[in-house]
Image 1 (tube, rainbow, N blue to C red):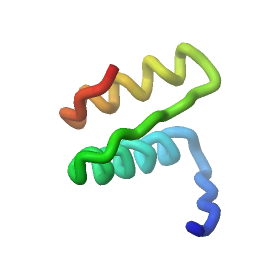
Image 2: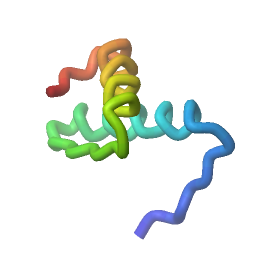
Image 3: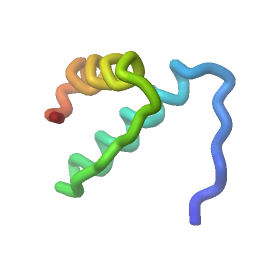
Image 4: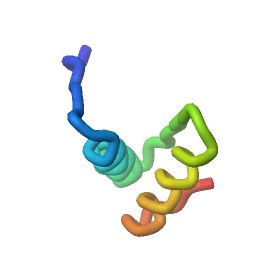
Amino acid sequence: EEPDVVFRAATGKWRAVVVEISRMHKTGRPVLVGTTSVEQSDALSLQLREAGIPHE
């Protein structure tokens, strides 16, 4: 089990999420990500696009 990680700001948290998604994507592993709002989903989608990570 991984230790809990706490971020001071949401931007750092979402940056870390994108890094982890990228790591999983490179291994061919699918990732399901849930958010609590449409705004968060849109912001994450933008970051994934900027990182060149395909997503739906």
